[in-house]
Length: 547
Ligand code: SF4
Image (tube, rainbow, N blue to C red; front, side):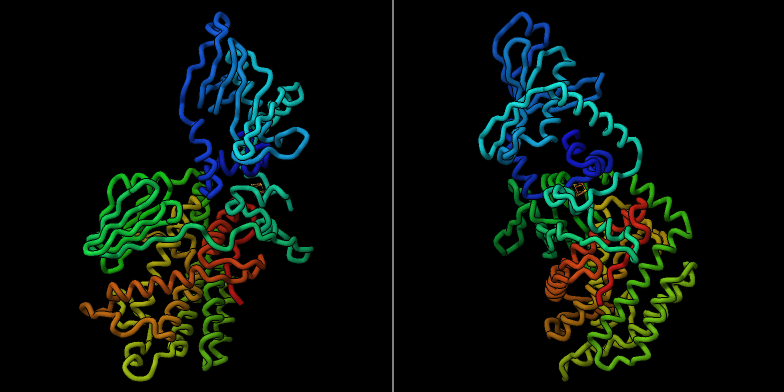
């Protein structure tokens, strides 16, 4: 905790007050290198015992606390003789080339361990930092200056933790590119969005990887059984060899119908924070299994407070609807060569009206009017081959529950997948996906997920439908009539999911931040910007709109 505070007070707040954590290759590698010292071994005799006995002490992974100064630590290694002990802290990398031999956060951390030992009655005048990669030990003397600095940082950390306000991001700091929570903190993005448009805008550095390391896993084969095998998930399917994937490369799992999971596999997924989304065979998104709820209670309190405030809710809702209408207009302009100018003008007018709306009912009316204009020009974006495909992909109007033609079946299926992705993203950020600002609460409806996905419906789902049909990836044979509706066959679903994932993985230039980023990552950035808005860090929710 002190290590993080010394590095950056905001990092401390994110990790220790809001419970943020991001697994990365660095953290996994760090854990692996720490594994040996994390195994508890050896014994540390009590101070009275050690005063009488001078034998050597060598104990690993020792938990100790000091009530007076209010610290608790797990010490990687304790070495010493008799009553004199030295804490040894293991670090993953190489010894830094600086006169002190270690950075301040690391020195403060080992000094805090020394203070705990002193309060417990041991003598402790220095600590050691061991750099695993360069195999070097660096002695850290506990000078008066270092002790004073450690106690000051401890006092500040406790004060900040109780304030309930996240410290502002560091400005243009070289620490940010190395920070494990940069993708959650969004230091430059928050600064840009909180700036006055009239002033000089800061450059937003590319600190986020353009794409995620982990990807969704879809399992729709009926009768499949998923189990844990070491660090991998194994999927057994009747009549086919098993397939495996590493847990750390999976962001979340979606299953359709009769798919079984062993309890060991489920425990591992919960432990790693990998949610499992359950769809019925008929594509109904009916549940999600995940580990403990995100620890960021502050965010949920703000979410509930804002949702109960009609003015604050509509201020967010109008930006969401504006963004959706603007993106629908862009999609039509790019893909329908015959779209009447009047339709584009009407969508521009409705987007502007929505951006100024102060009444939730009026906003719904504007959204409905825009949907009418959009879907009445939607067919012009589809270029089905003449002949047998053309009537199948003839689009007349948007219909659902159930969708009555293949185009509507594709739209409904992809909107359900997008709602699932928005739900998973919101949970990972710490929101309650069921309480929205535009969509009002309704039993079983992930209202906030529906809010978040609005901007992405045209950009991701509709765009994937257009490319599936125009590139002949999907054919009329991929659909089946069921009662009064039409649904996708399993093979058809596979093609559609692949097209959706390609779209989510494609890069787009961010209109405000200027860097290229995948749609999947934008979805997360938008959820985090919403969280920053609720925390009062950015004045308004900015929708993601392509040009
Ligand atoms: S990204 Fe920068 S400002 Fe944000 S927590 Fe990390 S070091 Fe602090």
